[in-house]
Length: 145
Ligand SMILES: [Zn+2]
Ligand SMILES: [Zn+2]
Image 1 (cartoon, rainbow, N blue to C red):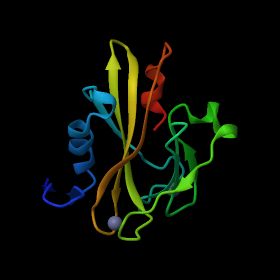
Image 2 (image 1 turned 45 degrees about the vertical axis):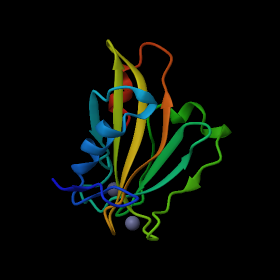
Image 3 (image 1 turned 135 degrees about the vertical axis):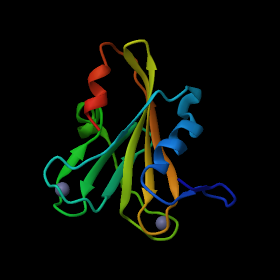
Image 4 (image 1 turned 120 degrees about the horizontal axis):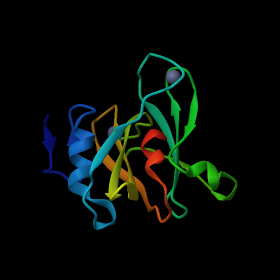
């Protein structure tokens, strides 16, 4: 694992760097207990995802770059009719990302979620959106990445 922290943006050399990034980023100020990698449930190929997100509402969805399968992350299906998602684009112009979600826990529940991305073109790491989870039970969100 190599994370370059020298520039304006952190960059990582492989998808696994996302986990280290999310743990260091600590969205919401909470320690990240789990990092769950997004995997397409529809195909076995892996070429990353296109991502659409709404930072105001706390929403993200991913579209598999190889099969086009769309997945709304976490609890986004509850608010999908109210959001105005925008396509995520890396400063380099890249639009395909590795995706992982950082989970901060409160005992058995989820306290905070952060969506981490790594540009497949130049390795730039980012966290375009994160939000609080304020209901229980919420452990099922770990299976909704
Ligand atoms: Zn797929
Ligand atoms: Zn990029």
